[in-house]
Image (cartoon, rainbow, N blue to C red; front, top):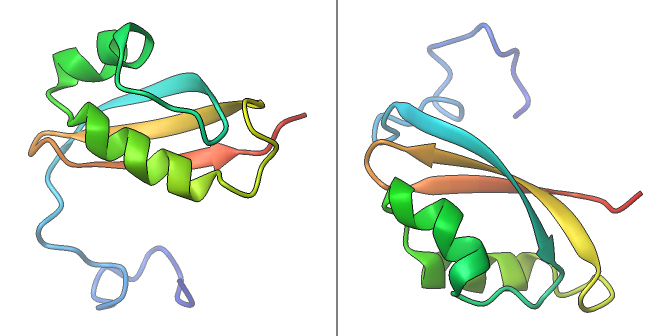
Length: 91
């Protein structure tokens, strides 16, 4: 965003549909190879998140990396079962 973070009135920063943060989780997922399964399900399932949607979005976001490179993902899960994530570059 182009404005300062303390400006709560900024329309580009304010999202009224965003619900309260439920949990912040850290995952290690292979680039462009995430699959709904036990490894991801054990983390996302209890949070009520859609594993297939996460895998689809994650694979699209990491398609430019070398396939199967382990990447760290910081995922924010919200009370309304929505999520956002940030992929950290490999060391």
